[in-house]
Amino acid sequence: MPYEAYKVLHILGILLLFVALGGIALHAWNGGTKQDNQGRRAAAAMHGLGLFLILLAGFGMLARLGIIQGGLPGWVWAKLALWLVIGGLFLMPYRRPGIAKPVFLLVPLLGALAAVLAIYKPF
Ligand code: HEM
Image (cartoon, rainbow, N blue to C red; front, side, top):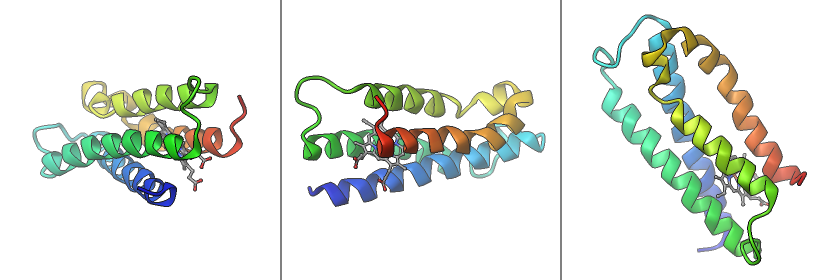
């Protein structure tokens, strides 16, 4: 698959992940629970598919760019860490409703940080 196609899939994965996370966080911010979320199965599916596509297409792009040979650079490790953190936030707004608001407001900044790492490759 060409680099450009991987990039489109990477972006599709990001959109799926952030729509799912935003929906969950706003629902929990409004006092909602996992059980009374009518769209919980769709959100869970979008979250899982999004994470999968981000990782698959991320490594696809690395292969096309010839970056994988000789070990991963620091910015890729940092993106993998952000992927874990953002992915792990999925059920947190329900488990700790107090963080629903910060998740909703601050997660876009974590996404922007992941973008900065890929675009500027600072290390
Ligand atoms: C939630 C986590 C992530 C977000 C929000 C994210 C976001 C982005 C964005 C916005 C871009 C720029 C697309 C463009 O140039 O138009 C990008 C590129 C890229 N990302 Fe990610 N990414 C994430 C995770 C990852 C992971 C885990 C990997 C590695 C496995 C990865 C590897 C890459 C690569 C290789 C590029 C292309 C860099 C280039 O073209 O020079 N990303 N990412």
